[in-house]
Length: 262
Image (tube, rainbow, N blue to C red; front, top):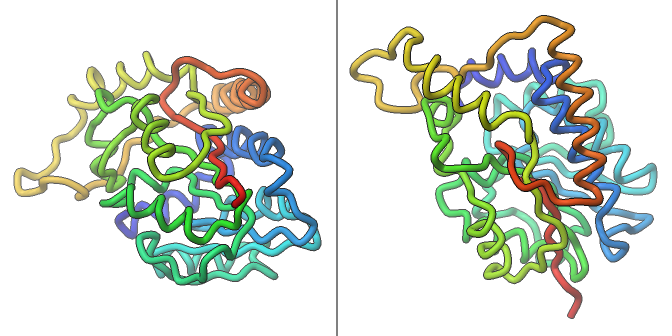
């Protein structure tokens, strides 16, 4: 992402409903990973850690005996992450998700939260994830859903694609994973996202003619405090549902994929 996007993310992700709600959903998934990935000395790798807002959630998942390694491609994002109060004890490093700088079978648990869509080669990325996971280890992930919702928002965030349910499930299976859980999330958002991106967004100030993609900030509609909190509470409820049942629509896909033991 552009440098200004990291600064905006750093400001927003502790309070803005989308970031807070996604953490609630992911936290529920982390509690549901198979026992094979839940070790007392849990080694967790977070690929695409961004500015570090997820560190408290991840620390809660690994416990006091576990360890977190957080990696991002952007040195700027890592600067923000190192300044986070919960970065103490976390190994923070720069790295490329397509060439993970770790040995085979190094981690019990791996998180990729809205990262896969940023990578030019998602097949290679999942092959690297499979390589560094221990047998029985799990990948917890989230990605944007529905290619037909593609817009300038995706371009600003440097997305290469959005995902469909079946194609993502097949991609995970073809990469050697068992799909332990896969569900849509952000279920309240499809009609609102379509309205915002297809009806409202086109009438926002235009980008310069020379700007083709990745040139301006993503659009995050601002909400009154009450509306923001109501959406957070809704997503908390959604997270509890996803732990037991698959949702059939939403603007995100979330899940758990497992590397079965040898």
